[in-house]
Image (cartoon, rainbow, N blue to C red; front, side):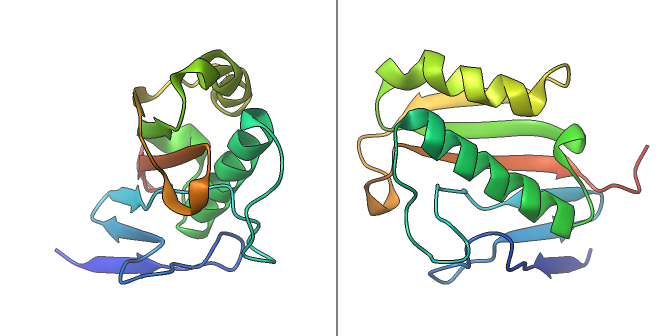
Length: 130
């Protein structure tokens, strides 16, 4: 089975030995998206809502570059620095996934890259799948 490596300037560049996303068969697997502004490479300022918005925008851009989209996501994994941010994160997340509700795991992480408050990764179907 072929592996296609996905890259886009509309999401933060990989800063290590990994890809932004890969497509394998009918599935797209994203790397964790943190709230970095893809234009500057800097963490966006603000609370969990601002950071969640940026991380989810990065995820959306990456999925679109891979030939998919949020409506094709089947599973997300969310890492929060502080579980007290759960409700505020859900408020933002629900705007992105509205009626489409993929399976999700959400865990507290003692420390996330660059000191961010949230990281989100996803598994999605490729757009050309029914």
